[in-house]
Image 1: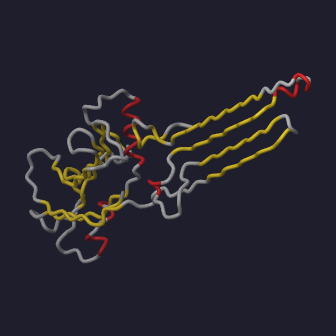
Image 2 (image 1 turned 180 degrees about the horizontal axis):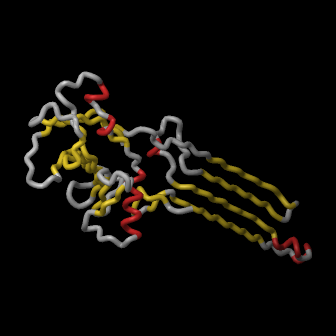
Image 3 (image 1 turned 135 degrees about the vertical axis):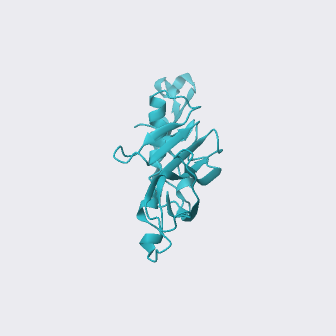
Length: 239
């Protein structure tokens, strides 16, 4: 998740400091209040004398977040049996505790219908006037790994005693058409096989008895191994 951010202090327009009490947040989920992920960072101000790109869009303000941190936070919360009704705090780097991920409820990256960008003052009653610019919110480096699939069929006869047909197929996670995006490709690993046999058991009996005893046998199985938990579809199953 990437985005450029620029902030200006309208009270002190030459302020170029990093303000640990003024924080930008991005909240995404199925709603704004009960089921969401949130990322929060402190803001560095751009002075009104700034002319270079690095001053106007300081690197301290750039959003460059691996979305795995959202799912890592949710997994850790569930491991610690933390209540889903409260905001769980996940510090990305203990050396820089002012950047944090929050989780509340049961959000999933597979069902994001709401996104909020905002700024908050965590410095108590101090009044602030901040002009905030955000630009180019985007996803990059999407997991675009492909997959494979195959089928096989075999048919043979055992003289006039039996006719046997065997088939099998498999497809891996990531398999799909060339024009399909990552989210439209297989999210499961599937394996299946089938065996069909037609046997003439009367071949074991004397021919002059005149019996005909056909026997048909059929066996088919399918195994599906999903990549993601169906009840929490941004959490991968452990191998």
